[in-house]
Every structure is written in C-alpha cells, then in structure tokens.
Amino acid sequence: MSEAGQTNKSKDGAYRVLARKYRPADFSALIGQEPMVQTLTNAFATGRIAQAWMLTGVRGVGKTTTARILARALNYKTADIDRPSVDLTVPGEHCQAIMEGRHVDVIEMDAASHTGIDDIRDIIDRVRYAPVSARYKVYIIDEVHMLSTQAFNGLLKTLEEPPPHVKFIFATTEIRKVPITVLSRCQRFDLRRIDAGKLVGHLSNIARQEGIEVEDEALAMVARAAEGSARDSLSILDQAIAHGGGRVTAAAVRAMLGLADRARVVDLFENVMKGDVAAALGELRTQYDTGADPVAVLNDLAEFTHLVTRLRFVPSAADDASLSEDERNRGLEFSRSLSVRVMARAWQMLLKGIPEVQSSNRPVSAAEMVLIRLAHAADLPTLDEALKSLGDAPQQPSGSPRNGGMPAGGGNGGPGASAVSQARMPVTNGGGQAMRLVESAPAPVAFVAPTPEPEPVADAVPVRSINDLANLAEANREMAFKVLIRRAVRPVRIEPGHMEVSLTNDAPRTFLNDLTVKLKAWTGRHWLVSLSKEEGGPTLAEIEATKREVALTDAKADPTVAAILARFPGAKIIDVRLPTTPEAADADIDAEPQPDPGIGLDNDDDDPF
Image 1 (cartoon, rainbow, N blue to C red):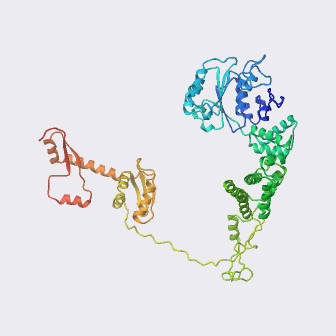
Image 2 (tube, rainbow, N blue to C red):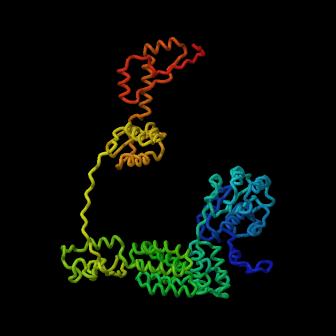
Image 3 (cartoon, helix red, strand yellow):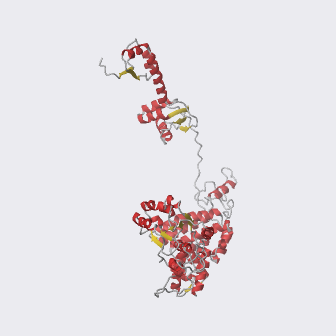
C-alpha cells in the first residue's frame, strides 16, 4: 500500500514531491528489504516481539519509513483485529496519524538536535506513564549515533528493561558510532541498497501512475545515479520530469546530471584499448563540449572497465536492467577479447588518474593526460609477457650480424630494435589487441664480470658469550643497554654472526632489533639475532645473584665471621663483595690474611659499643 492514489497536491494545495507521495505505508510496499520483512512477519506471528530495534543503512533506503510502518504494526487495531500485525491491508484506527508523524503515543525525535543527557532524562521520565490511546508508546530516534556518551549511558537501563507498554526504534547511517552496549540490547536490521533493476521497475511503475512518458535508458540513468537509494531516485525523477516538461528522455537526464553518453563512453573505451590517442582525445573533447564533466567521464570509463572485467567471469551480469544495449552487447565482446591483465592495468591507472583530475585546476587537460597514458599502455605487453617473449627468442652467436646485416652495436644509429623484433614478439598480448613495436638505436651492452662474494672478515671484537656482549656495550658507553643485556638475555647459541637467545618477560619489544643494529655498529659486521623457543641459560644478573647467595652462605659459615656475629648480637651480613675479574680473585688468594673488608656488618641494636 502507498499513497499512489492521491493527487500531487496536499490538503493546503502545495505540490507534494514524488518521494513523499509514493512513500510506502506497509511492509508489502517496501522494495529490496525482503529479509527484514520476513523476520518481522515471523516474529509477529509467534508473538516474539522485541523491545527495541536498530535500523541501519545508507541514506534513502527507508529507515524512517520502516520505523513508522513498524510503529503502525505494533499499534494496529481495526473493528475485527486488535493485536500487533504486519498485515496492514486495511487501515487501522491509528495508522493515518502514525504515518503522518502526529500520533501522541508515537514520539519521533531527531538525535542530531537532541544529543544531551537532558533529552534522555525526559524520555526516561515519560516512559513510566501508559500510552494515551494506542497499545504501545513507541519512541523513534533518528540518527541515534549523534547522541552523546552520557546520553547513551543514561538510556541503557531503560533500554534493557523498559515497561511492557514501551518500544524503541532507532535509525542510523553510522552504525559503527553506536556503542556496543546499545547494539546488544536491540534487534538489528541492515537495510540493503536497492538493486538497480528493482529501482528501474519501481520508477517505471510510478511514471505510469503519473502518466509520464519516460525512456527506458533515462530510467536506467536515474537508477544508476541514485546508487541504491529509493528517495534519491524519486528526487532525480521528479527533477527530470520538471526538466523535460512532462516527458523524460535520456538526453535530458544526461544533460541535467552532466553525465556522458553511455554509448560514447563505450566508444572512448574502445579507442583507448586500441591505442588510438587522437580518437580518444577527440571523443573526450566532444563530450566535454556538450557539457560532460571530465571527472564524470573518467568515472564512467572506470565503471565500464569494471563491467567488462566482471562480464569475463560472470556473463550473467549482462542481464542487469540498468545497463544499456551498448554496454551489454559490446561489453560482452570486450570481455572475450581483452585479457584480464590489460583491464586490471587500465583500472589501476584510472584509480590513480581520477584524483589527479579532481584536484587539478585544469580538469580537461588532466583527463587528456590520463587517456594518453591509458592509450600508450594498452598496446604494450605486460611484464610477464615480455619476459616470456625474451625467453623464447633464439640465441644468436657472438658477433653475428642482426637486423638485416647490421653489426651487434647498431653502427652509426642503425635501426636496432629496442624491443623484441616482430618475428619474435607475438602479434597480440594475450587479449587480441594489436601491439605497437618501437624501434630505436640500441645502446652497446658491456659485459660485466660477476663480482665474487667477499670473504668473511673476522670480528674486530669477538663476541662469544653474553658476558662479552655486556662488556662490548660497556666499552661503547651503552650503560643502559648493558643493564638490559645482563637482566633480560638468556643465551641459547652464539656463533660468529649469529646469536640465538631467549628473553625474560621484562625485555622491551624492540630489544632484538635494537641489539642487531648495535652489534652491526660495534663489530662492523652483520649479525642475525633470533628469538629461540628454548629456555636458554641464566642471565648474567641471575648468575651474579647465585654467586652472591653462595658467598653469603659461605661467609656465615666462616668461623671468624661467626665469632663476630656472636660478639655483636643483632648484627647481620648485608653485603658480600665479589671480585669482578679473575686477576682480582687470584690477588685475593695470594694476599696475606687480613681482616676481610669484603663483608659488611650491620648492627640492629642501639649499643654504641
């Protein structure tokens, strides 16, 4: 059901645009949203009606309209039916007021202008009261993603456990901006873009009801320009009717929207793929003189390139109702004759060229340069084809004449081929299009003997252990890095140029990369530092801690130290100084017995003795 039977003028005599006049009034009139309609039909039939719904999709697919239809279904009441129903064929008691947005129990709020917590507090205060006349009090909040964080948080409790007489319907075009805590409390429906074929049928039906003569190609242009939006398509059709004075033609729509003729876009594509630069530039200039935007021309060219590539793999795509006969028939021909590599290359060049034209202060000149690049590259072989052709070419003996008796060097500017000659290069590049061969004077090629790999050079500072690594860091005044080495590195395997270690949990994430860089700077050679799955040996800090514990135990067992501890009650050993080098240790052994200065005592008593 829709408002199609009504006149174009509202009650006050003002003209009503097609987008409002043909707005759907029940679920059967919604186009392209069959999955959502099926889900709601089953839910209403079984009584599994949610307390909140989230409707999301691009502009013009029917989010607000669906919210109103859903509010109407919740409050549906006739002389024979008094329950929620999706069968809205017969207008109910509240239907007209709800669809016009003036029902007292269906509150529509625009979150873009009511973003704060105070607006949500007002809703929370009012949900406690029962509806005035309808079955449910329905809150429709449009563009809900515009609510503030405080507003969302204030709504959570009421949204999770609303009174039985309250329902919430949210609509948004930016679903990612809605907090997950809100989404988890709603049933979500993603309203899809409307297929171009369905839009063409919908527009054709409206034009028939309006008594407007519309060309099929014009409807296809309108549907393509709407990009899946029913509201946009009706707005464009409304404008086209006014532009054409009651008759809508393809030429009028093309001039109104600044579009290029689709047939001429196909001609431009053909000229570019043949490498005919002059014809391509002439076609672009002709379209520009008739009012086509250079950016729109390149966009249409990119769209047709994508269509040709798609038709190669999905021939059934030619059945799309939004395609013209030229696009359908010639697109299929191109898809059979052009290789995928050529079309992919053209697509990439267009993607890079279109932003250049958009940002240029001379868009038509920039567009011409893009077409020149496309035409020049279209008849060149791809890299793998050129390499294959070179590999298939027969080898000629050294010093033998080439190119009709010319010496290998080409003489004084002789016509040596800079590319593979016609006899060696295939005529087509795998896709059927002709290939241009460029001839120029070849440059002499000098033979360069391969450079032998340098012999490995021994490290100026050998690193055979983690202790060597720590000493190397200290020698280069990297004291902070030395501390990291002592604390975080567990050695697994150390060889010249290769170090395999495991790390403790407190090692920085970039430690291995930093160590590789520093080793190259310290030793003058490349090092491969890898992380091992093995546990590895103890760190230098752990080794030192173990030695200190052993020394502390030995000190406690020493008779002299034990006597001192007994003489001073409460005293304890707080430090044991270990020799840092083997020479120092030997010196300590050879020295005459002295009172041990390496043991520090601490007396916890207050005895001044």
